[in-house]
Length: 121
Image 1: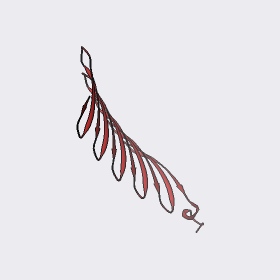
Image 2: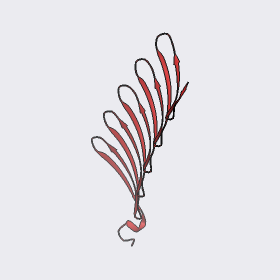
Image 3: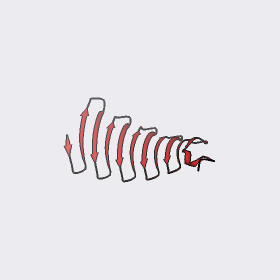
Image 4: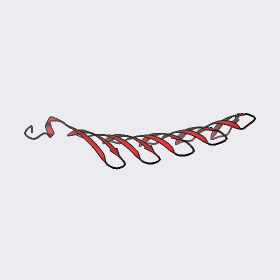
């Protein structure tokens, strides 16, 4: 087990190879990386003022779940190597919109409040 200012690493060695569990701490993220001889799997949790991202990376590609927070919306984006699916929930004074976007297009479900409907103002 090794310690530096940036990470703590636990390495388990076997005869044919090794498995490493690395926990990295910075001001921006905490990363847990599990490395094998043929490749690795990484789980990275990044924190900023705008979003929290959980990224699971494999050798051939990755899957990312990103939760973005702004004053107007909350977005959950699931990204794969070939494309993505996004679920966006937008809040305004007039409506709440749930938008599901795919790489080739999107489907939107929009819910209006009574103040936004014709004849209700």
